[in-house]
Amino acid sequence: MTELSEWEPGINGDFNVNKAIVRHMPNGTKIISAESCGVSAWTKTAKISVVLPNGSSKRYFLKCATGRGARSLTEGEYCSASAINEVVPGFAPRAAGWGDYHDGESHVYFFLGDYHDMDLSAAPEPANFTTQVAELHSKGKSPTGLFGFAVPTVLGIFERTVKWEQSWATCFINQLQDVIKYDNETNGSWPEYDAACKQLVDAVIPRLLGVLQSDGRNIEPSLIHGDLWEQNIGMDMETGETIVFDPGSTYAHNEMEFGTWRCSWAFHFNSPIYMRLYQRHIEPSEPANEWDDRNRLYSLHPYLNDSAGHPGSISRSIAYNDMLFLCEKYAPLESLEKYDPEKDVSVTHAYVQHSTHIMRDAHMNHLSESLALDG
Image (cartoon, rainbow, N blue to C red; front, side):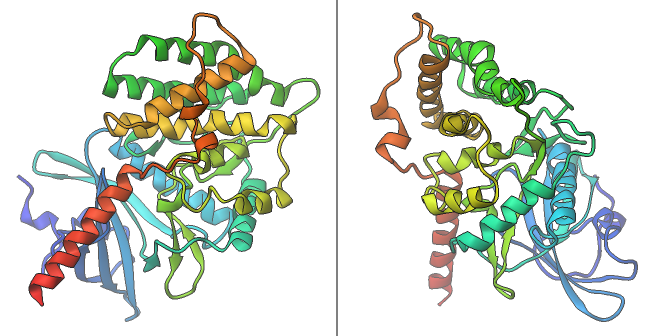
């Protein structure tokens, strides 16, 4: 059982604050309140209001996680947000710290950063936003000159392999094999799918990504946010600036950033204006005529990550069909099933609401009902 002395006493709100968290605030900070806030599938989050030693008010955002991937989630977010802000100051909330404590039998890891009151429904202004993303990619240089990251990072609750690699194809294979494994653990083996995955890893990726670093071509590792989709972007209500959050960064081929913009749940970034404006700053890598196929390949990672986190998700079958497309084009294998354009969302333009959208809507409906009852 956790000792009472380990918790900050005398604060308002519904969220207990461990003293391990307070140590990442300026010495002498007084906590006024801590309130649960936001909707998260994997973590508990809170807004902490404090008075700093100089008498000024400040708010912090706290994220607490337990279980699978908890350390990588919090340490990875701290290192990712710090790296992003070093390259594009203010693009992500300032990271104050990360750490851990015990709450009874639970080992809790936490991330602490600046709190921003954000409008999460507004679409980012295309020109300014894509300029900032391009600045992140062009100025965010790998400290080793290799692809990877200094610490493991997480998408959802699933850790990505980030060991340093000279070959981008090898680095991406590492990350894709992660989500293939997590997906199979969640949804079980599927022989036809397993065969497509094997052909993709053995033949398609070495061809489609290997060519980026052959015949005199080269790509430099770029710092990417790593999970840049609509639910991780907001408009600061005080400044009007676009803020990106929940990063799970890595130094990667810059085009990997946009795999999720192709996915069935995209509702702002499926507009061509964003990519068109971004490419005014950074043109597609050569061979440029294979950009769309690389984008399809990169979308497999978020699709399978989503499938692994949400059993029965349609994302698995969408990803499987995209694998078949890529196999037929770059490494045909007679034993594989045939690609079906009627299941291709880039052809049908079908929109499939992401699981976190459903959670958010349910949360907002619950709040509305509670306010109506209180009234």
